[in-house]
Length: 440
Image (cartoon, rainbow, N blue to C red):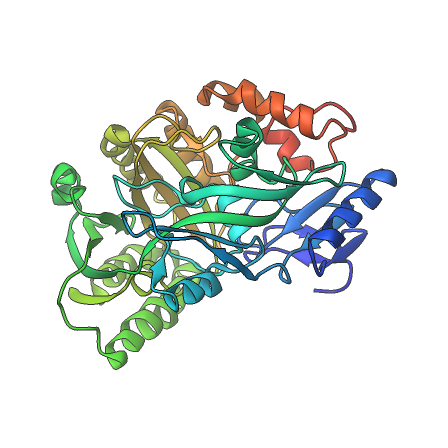
């Protein structure tokens, strides 16, 4: 990265900001926002760059909040043992989980990547899996942010509830998040059971499988095998031997997987056989570890991704349609489809708003074209009233997203009021949201 060039992790976005600044504290964030506004410049915030969309891109001022990563406060335990923890918004998830673990605390649920900044993860709707659990934004209790006027404001459901709703999941359009208060739970272990199962069995048994605390599965296109992952809180199984973990998580899941994807790129006719091999390469295993160790998996093979949220009871017919399209199209897809689940929530722009949700994520190796594949899956997802992940590739626009979110008008109203000059907008936020008034 040069002084005026920024790229995201996947390589799908390159931006050329007028300046890239890492403010040392909240006061400097406020000064930078005021200065940008006075000079007619826009402001965006970049975390770890794990969004596949241009969510962080700008030609104005790009802020990086890496220095706002301190643990500010830990509250007294509630009757259930949970505590409110306030941290700097720029903290990386891996650093947050380590700091929480040192205090016998944990996040209630996580996704499978911990490289993101906390602010970026909640602002784009990052989630894990668990039919009774919500995404990361549901764990947010309060926020501190810098508004377009350069004011530092503390907000919560009790103090400016509407602004809180937009700020905790709104692609940074409410302001620059500087501190986040999370509800954290006592540290816990998970017993992880991972096994390849026939895809038909998984789809027919979802009701039973979703009774687990956390369940997800991966299906390799043009095979009949799904890799299932069931995580149950607590347990007494042995830890996974370090040598086996390195072999399976690094050598097979990353090193060998990179090789199979390169082969599939060079010789597309091999992809079905390579997928069958990949689906069975990892043997069944059961082990117990701390929650972050189980939730998070190393992801070293570069890819592009699109993910859609649909009603949980629609996931089986939707997957069957994707299966049929892949069979008839013979599309070269050496990456598995990932399926996860979440509880309904009430976060205005959450993809799980007001309905139990299944997430269907499709990936493509970065050396292969994803366009036709993603277009076809997106068309299927739209037929099931799908909502695209805000940080992953999609082609949707505000005019056809508005009807998918019952609180869309409220989000637009608050965004217009808090940022009338569109200081925190960019081309992506204007495409997916009804733009606030002001500069276009």
